[in-house]
View 1 (tube, rainbow, N blue to C red):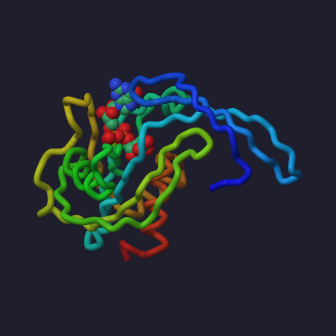
View 2 (cartoon, rainbow, N blue to C red):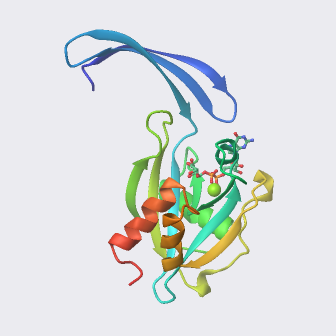
Length: 194
Ligand SMILES: Nc1nc2c(ncn2[C@@H]2O[C@H](COP(=O)(O)OP(=O)(O)O[C@H]3O[C@H](CO)[C@@H](O)[C@H](O)[C@@H]3O)[C@@H](O)[C@H]2O)c(=O)[nH]1
Ligand SMILES: [Mg+2]
């Protein structure tokens, strides 16, 4: 409940792959004044992401794929290095989603993962909340090629990188994906690879 909010109306602007709504609402400022405001909200559901880490080898598994929104924002070739991630389907939990995505995208079979952070990815524009996981991996868990689903036109390269190199890649801006930076820094702060 938010007592500073009333008369909320929703106008759908686009209903295609995801939904874009314009939401108009009366909002009361701290000085008591009410004002009618309008915000566009893009709704593609929630998401889950995972950092797979190998404490013995001190490596992590990341993905590399073309991202049109990043290309559109002058990210030279649009290639994005990210933790494995996927959108959560309506009937699935975040954990079920990330276990499935881990097999589809990078080919590792994990039975469990620890949810360590929750984050709105861009709360001014997206409704999306992301559930961020970590899990340890080893070679025995590699059961499939990975690379994503052909049926979804995914083409995902799988990277196994030394953790120290990944930290450098954040510093030099080779990695500029927020969920990935959060997970790597979580691993660093909590010394998962030491
Ligand atoms: N036709 C069509 N397909 C789309 C569109 N947007 C996404 N797709 C396809 O839908 C699939 C979604 O793949 P997932 O692995 O489930 O999601 P993701 O794109 O990796 O998204 C993850 O990372 C995002 C960026 O951080 C997150 O926003 C998202 O929640 C999720 O965690 C991909 O095959 C992608 O190409 C679209 O606008 N049109
Ligand atoms: Mg994905």
